[in-house]
Length: 130
Image (tube, rainbow, N blue to C red; front, top):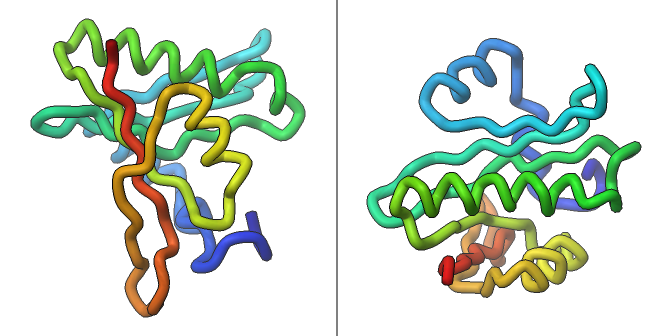
């Protein structure tokens, strides 16, 4: 996403250590093909919903439904946990992501501003599980 989103992605600050810590406090779902990791998503529990973050699919697996299957697993987890809402954020510039999430039933609920910016930089989207 370098050169596409501003501010730069927080993925640049991910390390094995802070990913391990994140996995210790959140639920992580992995997608594999054979022994190859092709996607992941982290899910953080809130009082009335699950926050879906760090959804990533390897470039070689994009367009194959990996992200949709990961979100399907998150939805099942949320239902089993009694949380009726999924929430996520996507960047303003990532219009294709906004459209894809919209096709999966997510709707925009807010726009937020990263520190130091004078314009919205992210869109919050929610999906109420039916």
